[in-house]
Amino acid sequence: MPLRLYNTLTRKKETFRPLRDKQVGIYACGPTVYWFAHLGNLRSYVFEDILRRVLEYNDYKVKHVMNITDVGHLTSDEDTGEDKIEKGARKEGKSAREIADFYTEAFFKDIEKLNIEKPRITCKATEHIKEQINLVKILEKKGFTYQISDGVYFNTSKITEYGRLAKLDVEGLRAGARVETVEGKKNSTDFALWKLTPPGVKRQQEWDSPWGKGFPGWHLECSAMSQKYLGTQFDIHCGGIDHIPVHHTNEIAQSQAAYGEIPAKYWIHGEFLLIDGKKMAKSDANIVTIENISKKFNPLAFRYLNLTAHYHSKLNLTWESMEGAQNALDNLYEATREFKSTADFNLGLGKLADSFGLAGKKTRETLKKFREYKEEFTEAVNDDLDTPKALGIAWKLIGDENIPASLKSKLLEDFDRVFGLKLKDIKPIAIPEEVKKMFKERAKARKEKDWVKSDELRQKIENKGWLLEDTPRGTTVKPKK
Image 1 (cartoon, helix red, strand yellow):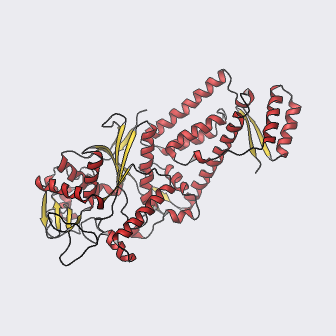
Image 2 (cartoon, one colour):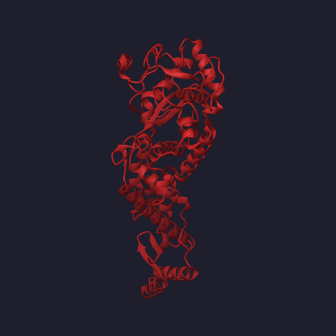
Image 3 (cartoon, one colour):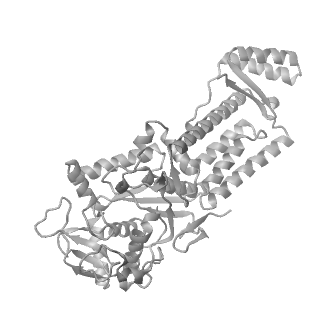
């Protein structure tokens, strides 16, 4: 099954066709680094990690670019309020640079705990001021800008399809639907490209420009940096659904005006994480961080919880749901450890038909089942990243008595290339040499149909603290609980 993804731009699921064969460029909106990322933020990065892993599972080479917003993100989407970085610096009594550096490092520690693969390129807004000024110059030359007392603005009335991504009622907005606005703006949907430092004010982060000393608008950085690292058009742009109505809409407008085309072919957005039914947000003071849940749960239990819901649907976080995810993850680890132990043990015994049951026709049947599971899993993840269905397939595999432990272990590690739950790190149980020797003797006795000796050896093995289970596909051994 080809990979199909839901494209916000067209509001439909589409077959993914990259601009270049087997190569994919992804731009993902990164954190604004003025405080710790909360689990609502991190759900977006888990979803983007799953997307990247699915692409790589399909043998695509992925160039993943993510920005770090360390300047320009104001407390209001209406180009008013204070820069979040400077506000955070004042609150903590530190410099803006210290705040940005500290929370950037904290962010990368958080995504490491969630086993999120680090983007190939991470780019900071403050390190790309030249590129952002050059983009404003291009827009100015093409007649898309105007300047008022507090900065340079993009004139959205010059773009006929402005608001297409969000399906905005642009005329309604221009009639005054947005309550808060900046005096002098020609249209309420117009947005700042370059904000000027007010007279008599000294900001911690400001730069000289052709329009005066100031700093870039929030949306500008993404257009400038995606163009630098991925070109004027690339394959996929990601983010949370809260980016749709303003940030991504404005990003499309300025990129299309400057370069003549919408920057990405596919726009893919993750839904909100709720906490007790409400959107998790710093402004509502209902946030939970990785540090909070790490006191009680394995952080990967949160990743597992994300896998149980489609990225395009809301996910409600409760302590009960986290406990359920932790229990499921523990059970998955226990099953993986058992399969690895059985597979490792049996492989060490040589090719005993009693251990594997894979001779002749049975071998062909088993390999057929192996392929069927892999195909089912691939179809699930290729259907717009359907991880809940993919998890169900993994659990069906775990309970399938017709698949030997060795192949279960191999398939689960293959599936984990997408899940990212670190199943490769699960170590097999160390079985004492004495028990291994008795196991070999028992396997030989069973092959010779010496059931009395077989039962005696079973009892001896159990007396040593190990349980045996004879299945249609071999004999498993595990320690008594």
